[in-house]
Amino acid sequence: MACTIEKVLTDAKALVERLKDHHNATESLIDQTSTLNKRVENMKEVGSGTSDRNQEDFAKLKKLSSYKPYSLLSQENTQIRDLQQENKELWLSLEEHRYALELIMSKYRKQMLHLLASRKLDSTPITNLYQEHSQLENKELRELVSFSKEITLQENAQPLQYGK
Image (cartoon, rainbow, N blue to C red):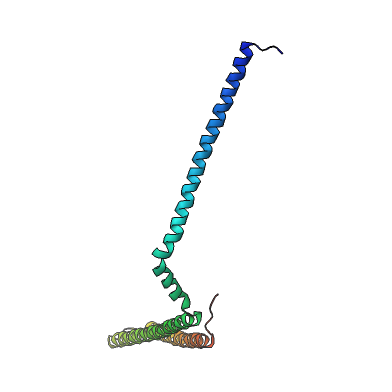
């Protein structure tokens, strides 16, 4: 094995390159460990600081969790019953207004018939239309009343259900 200067120089260059690679790797590891160290310190600070800063929030959450689901459900149940009662009242009001409107219209039609009769016009087609309309009107009112009674009975028969 002959040692030449060229061989020693190439070996030295290879060693220098390997040392540079190792130096870069150690620098990278040092940077990574310092970053990790900072993150760990931050986590420690956040962990210790959280108990001081968020004690009020924790107390609020504890207070909210102390409420029983039963009391919340009964409160909602009361609200639902109030809404159902209001709904029934609105339906009744709607029926009353419709009935009043039908009554007004029927009186208007009667007055128009009397007016036509007083003018001595041939009012038989109008009279026939009025009678047909009155019969339909009465039938519709009966259907509306029976429908509203059925709805009211169904609403009263159905218990309140949660979670559906």
